[in-house]
Amino acid sequence: MINRVEKLSLLSEMIAFAKYDKDIKNIEYNFLLGVAKQLDISREDFDYLIEHPINYIHLKSHSERIVQFHRLVLLMNIENNNGENNSSGVIKLYNFGLRMGLSHESITKVLYLMESFPNKIVPPDVLIDIFKTQYN
Image 1 (cartoon, rainbow, N blue to C red):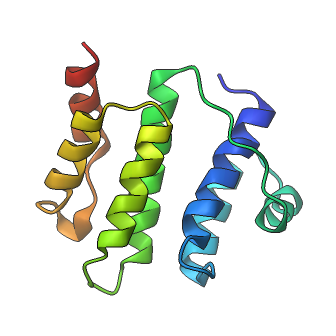
Image 2 (cartoon, one colour):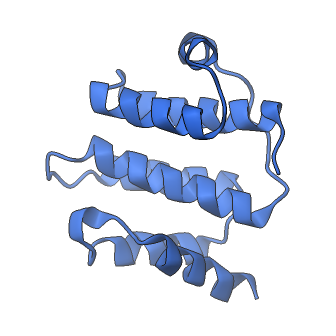
């Protein structure tokens, strides 16, 4: 299980991801707030992180990094809900995945397969299988 500082780091990273294109939209804010609740982070702490990001902490657990990557995939697809192709979002997601220490082959495969799923949302089991294959 990850500790509070790691949870705050994950959330701060997701906020930075959402802020990449300037402002956080309401739908992104609500999604991030939901993630904060899942991580047992109070709304006050969440709102504080929006204005005061903390440094990235590399997660030791490979499975936690995969879960975080999946959250970022979901967040990117919320951002791109308007149906436009956002290559900068894909590049941003790819770079975040590399920074987390995930294999570029797995990230590339997820981004490629994402196009074939409704709303570009890769099911968790498919995503896990991709990373599991590359990890072994």
